[in-house]
Image (cartoon, rainbow, N blue to C red; front, side, top):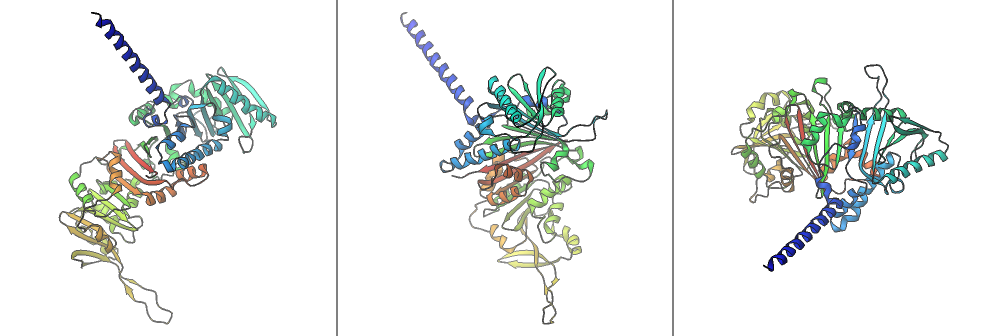
Length: 537
């Protein structure tokens, strides 16, 4: 009987120790930068002040130091300082573009949320009232004193510089406005407000700020109150940053090539970013007209695996398309499909015709500057392309190369005459070939590509195949992976990446080691999964 009190005390001590350990682990996890990988997406507080028709908005669910701590934690030991410095330059450049110095003005008090919304001036609403263009910046504070002291210093420095301040009340909040200069900029209209003592709003003028306060009172008029916005957050699930773009902002701000026809243009975009180890994961929902829905996966999964296994050497670009003929009819995706299959840069029409005639699956690979396509032996057959190739001046002929019976296409062209008066000669450059191998057909541009398909040891597509598997969407209608050099070339021409590079004040592409992209769809929605890999061992 005496043992029972002892056991009860022992059990109580164990529970206390376990509880303390669990609380300690929870506190460490809450403060750890690694939690950025699993942040649940909720409607950001700043979204209450963003009008529902704002062209572009961005929300960050962390303070300014956590991204640096994360980069330092996951980077290889030799690259930790460089990784943190690169993220720091980008952070400082972004706040500097908004006219703020992070180290001296924000670091001591800034907390989540951090939000930015951009507005465009237009002719006006239904009542004829013109809307003002501009921007709105929302900054969360760790405590009440930090936000108040920031605003005090913010306007004190501008008042000493000769700015005339106007203090008023609007919807129960104190507003301060005037013409002042942000960091290193020309004086412009500015207005600020403090909401609940821990949220600072800075706007490009009193009118913009009043509009933000107006829409915050009516859920139907602000971003957070939109049912489609809430549903998008639920579907995306997790994220460290959130971006929403209206249809008109896709081309201007994000550099997406859009079709000219109004009925073929996409709807709004909701995009979530989150770190994933040494990678940056992107998940997005893009509205589409119902007639532009991507085909649902219904191809031969076995053939796709066989085509991947047929590659005996690593490649620099690898794509798997389930129904290229259908995707080729979607104007929004035509530029992407032409680029990943090599048709955009091809000297002849062969790859474009193969893509437009193939019901899939189709494998597109590249090593160097030459395209290589793999299809089923009968989808399409060579005879189905004869008329179109002949109309383009291509001549078909059989050719055997190292025991491989090929069908090749050439085009006769004259070489310019020589200076000595002799007439030019005719040449027949190779513009494409086809080799049937069992149930597969391979189409290429250079005879040297046959080495990638004929080997004694199967090595597959190397790291690129692993990148596609890491996306975890094998049923996607389109999958594309690029190695480091190809990924850096692609990013260099993308407008948002160029803007990020400008904000960072230096190149950001050197650490990029790969890029993978997958598209799948349903009626009215295109879902995008992408992964950008950084660093090394």
